[in-house]
Picture 1 (cartoon, rainbow, N blue to C red):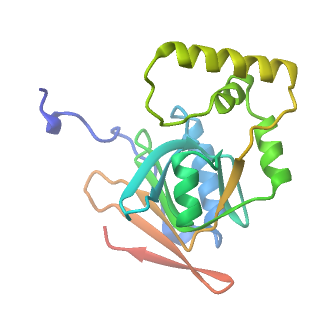
Picture 2: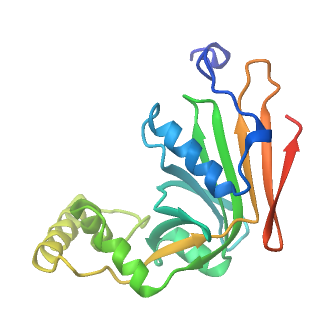
Length: 212
């Protein structure tokens, strides 16, 4: 096994982040960082979605960010998936973005709510054909006993999508994560990492510089 301490954590050149220049809204700063990350790293919109199961144990997986606006951050999934079931029982979540090529991390957490059926349906129809097929296959996270079962389910899902391109998978849901806190983390080689937290206070965002 290679030495875990032998791998570099970040590139030699890191961007500069001055919290004094941060905008009033965490969404504005996030979109700036996301755009900048997109020029340097693969899949900057990939995000770790963390939920809790019925026993209160943490669970996490990587999904794709769908949108950001004044209300918050949006992700999507089947309501019948493990994450959908978990969010129905405990509608709170955390999102974690990590762009090691820029030495940056964004963390946020808060309540989650499903968007309207119309918004969710539009989200599904905008998915690539292969992604729509995947949703119709179903059985996400169930035990797969026979590969032939998967092949048959995939063939049927492909037929559905091909014959009914506007069909929406039952339970497909776009979720809004409306954070109460959003933290921006900029790595520094001297380990004096720069951390800025936005904390919602009523209708405004408070900005707080944190110790590394």
